[in-house]
Image 1 (tube, helix red, strand yellow):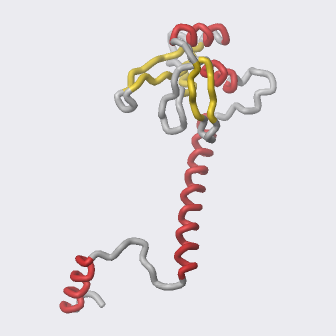
Image 2 (spheres, rainbow, N blue to C red; image 1 turned 180 degrees about the horizontal axis):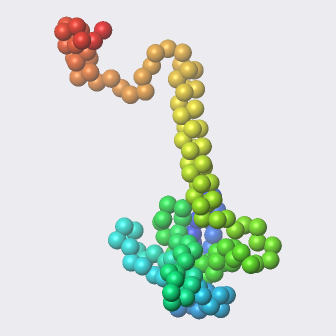
Image 3 (cartoon, rainbow, N blue to C red; image 1 turned 120 degrees about the vertical axis):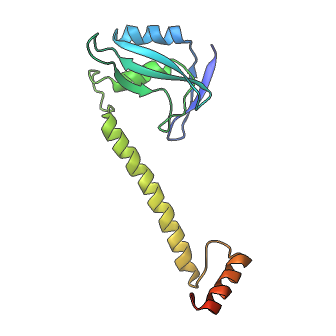
Length: 158
């Protein structure tokens, strides 16, 4: 296969060598014999989604490692970068300080989303305070004016 273009969550564009399922699965097994590449057809995304699991034996369920996609579940095209991602998650790799527990990862992601939301709210507040007058973000429709006049006549609004 040719080069596959993907983009990381931080916006970095990455070109990697595309590969088929068999080649990626073989490379995963060469790294660790317990790793499995599990393809799943996704109706939500209209394409194939790849997940990596660690086989834990016949009496225990397989351990889910990651979905080959972004934080929101959008799948990346299959490439050998899956193997590189597995190596990042390898706890036994020498000097691997990049491993993050999945719960910690989710907590960080929620904090990042909340910070973005808070920044947006602060921007809107500062714009409104800068104007200094009563201004409304949304356009008032004529129907609202009619409803307010009707309410004033009835004495239910001021």
